[in-house]
Length: 322
Image (cartoon, rainbow, N blue to C red):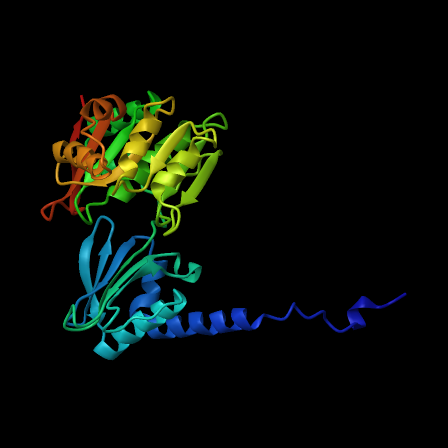
């Protein structure tokens, strides 16, 4: 009988040159991010890491707000942007001064936006991290970001399969709030509710047992995905953020036997959110669709930044589209 213990260990399959090259790039990125940035990827409260042209590194944490986290030299900042460009298989420089895309999975797929001179005085970037912790509607009440009555209204809308639009300005926490809505959807949805998530950057989280996440690309936009979704037997359709003519396809899908969906939209008030939704539809060469909006959007939740609030944001309005 062969003694297996005496046999030489079986080596793991050798890495391909491409895998080795990628591994070296990831290691180099981690070293360059260094002790100022790398620990922030493991902090579940961090939602954004920002570098200003003056070299000041800022960090925004959910429920805490923005704090300073040190200083980065111009050389280090430029190295960060160049390495991210390499991970995206592109280059950044004076002739291509804007860099955007998702960081590798080792960095949680965080969204990166970098800007180089001559558009700014010195290299500048912002890293939007995916939520590692999903905050519940009850936690929003505990932190006084919303009232108990507002939370109950949202929960009832979820149960009643109402379509919900979460609106707010930049950095107001729209996606985090949408994830809280998704958490409540997941708490009541069984296998009989097939939930399709559509976004261009993976930020939504849903623990329901029947979920289909889909990501738009440069070649396949959200409008095309929404049309494809119709053949995937969706029960609830959720869109990460409505920005373009996909607004019309979303409203049509919500209004044709797929109630109970949700989406976010950039606007400074609930009324302006409905107006902007109509404007996005018209950008696609379609006349105003106010009647369709009234039929398809049942609830608008407006969340806003509030520097006087302990959590730096709060739900300021919930209104019906009717």
